[in-house]
Figure (cartoon, rainbow, N blue to C red):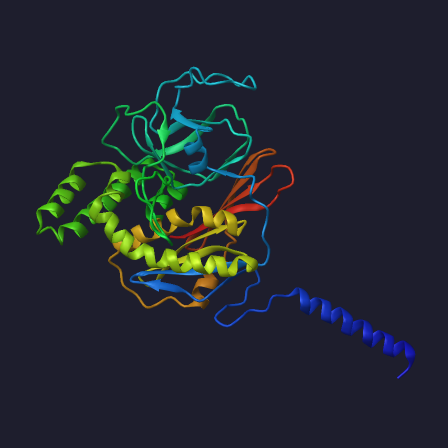
Length: 385
């Protein structure tokens, strides 16, 4: 072999070595992917199955403020539409003068960090509880933002507070339940989130809230022999608040029973997989893939995970359908198919881009940050129709 040929072979070997070193081969229990996402072996408990998702790349997200963090600190204010008197105006935007409206709230981000809002997050208070209808980013130190929402408490139109707060829910984490502390907003279960995100129709949202209330009541009535349980059944029948239904003692116990093992197992898995960018989940209920939530980083996933897993469990505890176990191959296929026949794009220049894709039997949503030094998808959600 000539010296030139030897050098050529050595060069190929070196290049091949570099390529191989840069790749992350699928390990046992993983399904390979062309999208940059891979599902891992599922965590199953009862009718709920979650497939952890790892990504080939992670992005810096520490600058983003969550709604829970902003409401707790007081840096984020949510109030009824038109109720902005006394709030600081910074950039000369026009005053909002109309009175309270069911499907509109006003949000002000007084922090120096961009605020991330997820569709499905529920704020309580005002004249009635509301669910956020669309993912979006609110820039730091913002003027009042007109926030599109849907009512999840149709039986009340009397103010209980001037501003909205977190729900007061407590979540059972890996270290056990957090007692006596407001931990965050509720995340609506996938069926309610879907009505707000995809249908964008108040009547559809209200109908789904009533349906879930009825199913929760029927679930609790099965054990209504004791006086204490009968009291909880009566409470479920007397409220129109989705948040109060989900925080009902008996309903919460059922959700805890299903959510806690999943949460603890996945929280442990996140820690193990942090270096491999665990960023989300594919969710199956009773043998059917229904949802996926994916974030730009493990850090963001960890912030949202406690309330996300409870939203999935809330769906599972009232589900009556039964099916065969979902496989990793099926979960991966759901994750891979994100391209729709039709796309709707909404831009807020320099802040975010929101894309909704409609495909065969699904809708997919992506929130892309356009803030300086970003340009990546902060959150991706997909629902089966």
